[in-house]
Length: 244
Image (cartoon, rainbow, N blue to C red):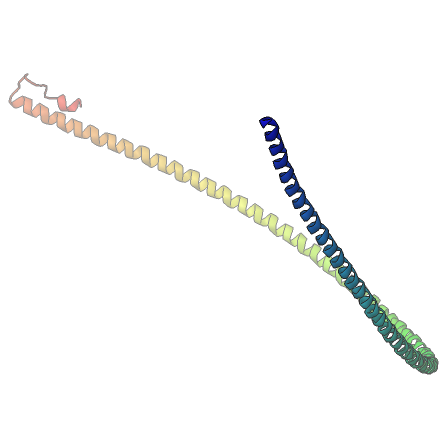
C-alpha cells in the first residue's frame, strides 16, 4: 500500500511538473505567436513603405524624364537653328568663293597673256644675245688662234734656244770635267810627291838620328877607353852602358 501511495505521489509530482512545463511551453508558444504577428505586421508596414517609396521614385523618374525630354527637344531645336544659320553662312561663303574664283580666273588669264607677251619678248632678246655671244666667241676664238700661233712660234724659238743652251752647257760641263780631271791628276801627283818627300825626309832624319847615336856611342867608347887607360879594373864592364 505504501508503494502504491509512493507511486501515486510520484505520479502526482510528475503530473504537476508536466503541467508546469506544458504551461511554460504554451506561454512560450503564445509569446512566439504574438512576436510572429508583430513581425508580420512590421513586415507589412515595411512593404507598404517600400512600395510607397518605389511609387514616389517612379513619379520622380517620370518627372525627370519628362524634364529631360523637354530639355533635349529645346537643345535639338537650338542645334537645328544653328545648323540652319551655319548652312546659310556656308551658302554665302560658297557664293563669295565662286565670285573670287571667277575673279582669280580672270586675273590668271590676264597674267597668262602678259606672261606670254613677256616670254615672247624675252625669247627675242635671248636670240639676239645668243647671236651677239656667238659673234663675240668667234672673235675670241680667232684671237686665241692667233695667240696660239704666236705661242707655237715662241715655243719653237724657246726650244731652239734651250737646245743651243743645252749644247753650250754640255760643252762647258765637258770642258769643266776635263779641267777638273786634270786638276785632280795634278793634285794627286802633288800629293804623291809630297808623300815621297815626307818619306825621304823621314829616312834622312832617321839616318841623322842613327849617325848621332853612333857618334854618341863612339864618344862614350872613347871616354871609356880614356878612363881605362888611367886605371883599369875588371870588377865591372866599362862598356856595359853601351850595351843597353
